[in-house]
Length: 328
Image 1 (cartoon, one colour):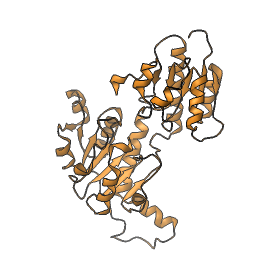
Image 2: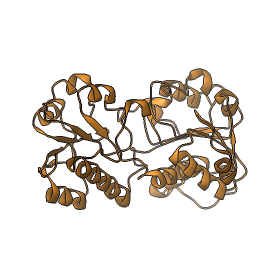
Image 3: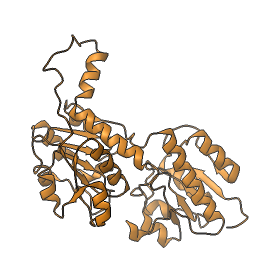
Image 4: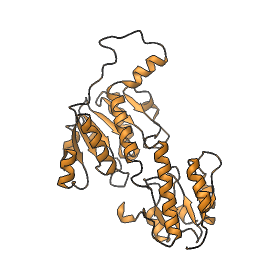
């Protein structure tokens, strides 16, 4: 659509610098408050916009796509994950889907390490004692955790983020192991000093820490199911900064309550912000509100990718971060 100022609807508040740039380039409708759009609002936006900019809080399914106007030609997702968008249905309707990959790699990997340390070193317990003024001085047995140096880390999903976690873990002296759909090239394995396991079952049974870094797809739903969680050592810790649906959350909660799993650090949850109340009550769990990618730098870079995808499309070219059904 060269030489045409596109109509763009953004479903959530974005950093000011991103919104300012969008207004300069496009005929854009921005969100006034930082709340998710209702389903009816999204449907209405899709009937009038050339481009929709949703986030992971927006479920863009086949039913919603059927209500889109003929002028809607691009869904420029603000975020890397697209499991909330029916990419197949969009393609059938001639609507392109783009995302923002690679931007939050380091931020998410940092958070995985932060959760790992928080769980193994009892940081939340120490923080709670200080904030409640119940700490009565140092004791040799107080807040005893375990060191991560020398421990075996099993990474489930060795894409950009998994590899970034591996690099950080090596700096902490951890032994890096991984399971992936495809084995990494030998030179990449060597650089990461990583050991590949063809069998996920065999890997998880031998690890001290499991880090979930794979996307949510039909094949990864409940990949860490009740049977596989029971393979974990009682001293093992599981970290998830990827997608909550990869873990059977009820089975994880039972394992943690029973002492079959030592601890968990979770930034994502199976039912979004509807957290299992039993999970909240457990002392060996650290829960965060999906803040793995929450850095100002990362959010701005995500916005820049969205703008580049829209601008490239407006110039009559394929968006650089177009998502194809075969990629999922």
